Length: 117
Image 1: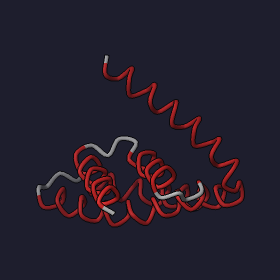
Image 2: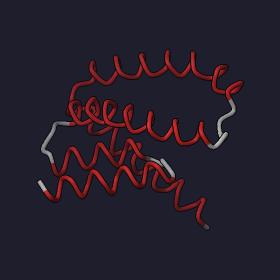
Image 3: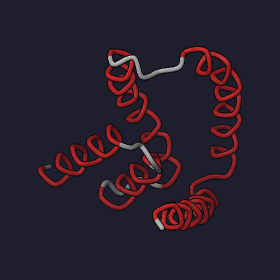
């Protein structure tokens, strides 16, 4: 339980600061340390990040660091894309989703490394 609490605290802190690849990180933690299959790890990560994002949103809103015009413009297509993506993840199942996850994680890691240098 202590390890799980520390993982949650660390993940939340990281997401609050940057949020880069936060879903990948949360899914990895849930898969490796909580023994969830890839589909449950993905769904659980979405629930966790939803609440985490509410807290981060409140902080950024309080600081005036949100462009509401752009947010209003982009939110509807993001919601549709999220719905389509979730349906696709469920239809793929845990094993195929694991393959997709690894591919996306590798691509994301490479992008982050190239942006650093």
